[in-house]
Image (cartoon, rainbow, N blue to C red):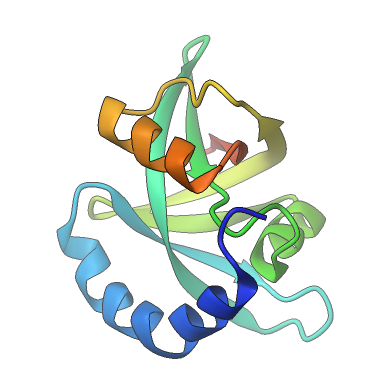
Amino acid sequence: MPIPMAVARANRAVLNRVVRRVAPRTRSLGLLTHRGRRSGREFTIPVNVFEVESGGAGRIRLALTYGPGTDWVRNVLAAGGCTLRFRGRTLELTDPRLVHDPTRAGMPPFVRFALARLGVEEFLDLTVVR
């Protein structure tokens, strides 16, 4: 797991609340909404969003900085999708797939470098429905 879960818990308690407020004003952050597998509750989290080319179909790639076993990733996989508020639009995302990519293809050079330093090689790819 690239970043320790203790950091994830601290982010959830403090940093995510701040980032949720600024995410709509940035070019690379989005707000992902997913439904809990057991609770059925909706949760919204900030995520770094990367658009990737995939044979003409719109695809979104999310770096899994805390690994693929986090609750939100498991929720999105179980539900078969989620919604994403990104750059002033609300996108419906479907067909979630875990991708192991040690080359970090499609990432800007600085992001590729940062993810390499963190040891991030896992991503979640989703198809944009609308």
